[in-house]
Image (cartoon, rainbow, N blue to C red):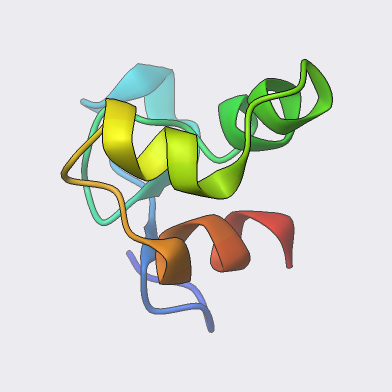
Length: 61
């Protein structure tokens, strides 16, 4: 299943069915938490190379 934000997907077999970015094992809820702890969007992309800045923007939307 996809949402209006095309990079956000849900799959009951991934991350307990929580929304994730592009079927990766990075849940939407983790991204704002990492940003709140002081990481920048660029650092997240560097740490998780499969993640894009567009994915991060979708998580925040």
